Image 1 (cartoon, rainbow, N blue to C red):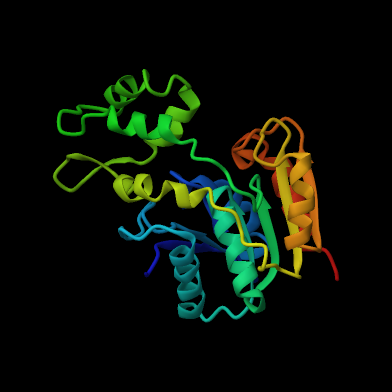
Image 2: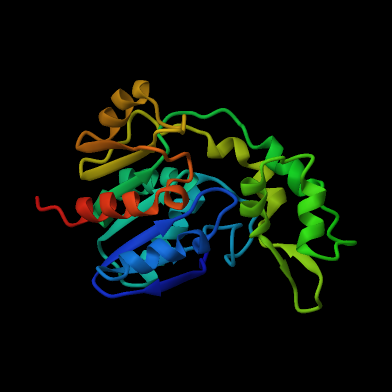
Amino acid sequence: MKLHFKTIGTGKPLIILHGIFGSSDNWQTLGKDFAKYANVYLVDLRNHGKSPHSDEFNYKTMVEDIVELLDDEGLEKVNLLGHSMGGKVAMYLAALHPEKIERLVVVDIAPKYYPPHHQQIFDGFHSVNLTTLKSRKDADEQMTAAIPNFAVRQFILKNLYRDTKGNFKWKLNIEAIEKGVKEVGTSLKADVSFEGHSLFIAGSKSDYIVDDDYQMIQSLFPHAEIITINGAGHWVHAEKPDELRESVLNFLNAQG
């Protein structure tokens, strides 16, 4: 699949992969900062953002999409950063195609299994009547009962747009994502690993990476460094961008 992406900056390629329900736009600000030192690729994963939709939604196909992008762009070896679901894609890509990855950064996700936990978000999507929708404010109000958290609603509503006829639509392929959401939580198999340099970044207020996960991370990524950013929840890049930027750049610029 030919994914939609944007490039900014020059230098060593840095591929950035967003999480579920997100898009490349979520990393626009930090991407511009990284672009001072690298050739940044802000990518929309399949069924997200401006990338094509498909009934197939799993890590195998998402990895194949990124490999196709790298081949199309003539990128032999890149640095790779992924958040949440994008972090799982990044882990799989590094494990299956280690020759393509220089350094790997994984933000607030472990290689373990996560049980499905997105039903509230799907309920929020289904609560919005697109055919009668008059404004983004109306969508927010319709979504409030399912998703009481204002910040989460604003994140989800970034996926709402008007088509050329002025009708409201979702950028996401919600049906395919909901059907394949169990896949998003799957764990990496114990027989895959990445021997290269890796950095795992956890948010101190998030439960996505806990102390018990360290052994699994280091068994599959034996040269992994694991750090925690204080005061950050799961959306580390939105909540503590300065700290994340510094950690990532220090890692990418390290020698050896």
